[in-house]
Length: 240
Ligand SMILES: CC(C)(COP(=O)(O)OP(=O)(O)OC[C@H]1O[C@@H](n2cnc3c(N)ncnc32)[C@H](O)[C@@H]1OP(=O)(O)O)[C@@H](O)C(=O)NCCC(=O)NCCS
Image (cartoon, rainbow, N blue to C red):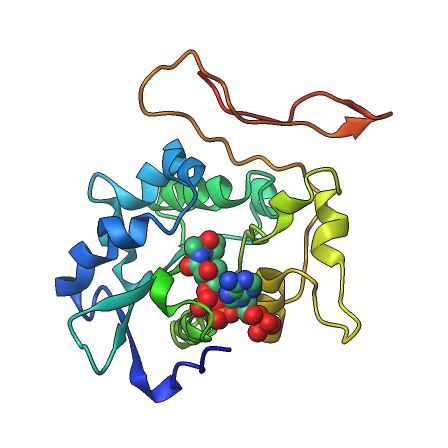
């Protein structure tokens, strides 16, 4: 087993603190950590593109190995949004998950609405550094930042790491499954629970919509519930 990465060796900065690290956060090496489909979500532009990221510099993080202080080895993103602030459309977490909180944050900015909660969006560790507890340290940094800025709650629309290995198991059943020691079965769910998280919503269909950048005749992702052993109505389509 690979040794844990020493906590004191990891320095975590927000982009507001270290704007010089911004380009590295989007290097090909770190981008390749995400599955291909995650790189084709149109909602992502409302957070990352067209200057939008400038509004979230206090909520975007670079993890640096102090022994190589100019090398980013992990990144994390989060976004503040208004939740349960009395608006009827904000009483429940969005079915659209990751897309939903980004769109809400964007609307909040346009309407001048004050955010009162934060959502995690991503933690991404460079491949050679994985399995050493760095994600956990990044999560703690995000949690501490949320608290330090006066937000009570940090939500995370979670994509359990190994759900794709069991496509026919209902999402809620998979996310709630525990090991004999009582901790969640899925390693990514487990990491969140270890950091103090509770599952507050695992009932909705998967609603994150991804689309290719250029038109294509190939349609390669359909998620549909199984009914009587046959695929039911799709809840997610990868559009041509
Ligand atoms: C998911 C990811 C962030 C985990 O980072 P990490 O630094 O390796 O995670 P940690 O070392 O803190 O370990 C977290 C848990 O995952 C488990 N884990 C780590 N690497 C694993 C692997 N290769 N296979 C199975 N489990 C693994 C660990 O055992 C740990 O759980 P446990 O201690 O309860 O057993 C990392 O794999 C990654 O960057 N993936 C690409 C981006 C991504 O998918 N991010 C998640 C969605 S935003």
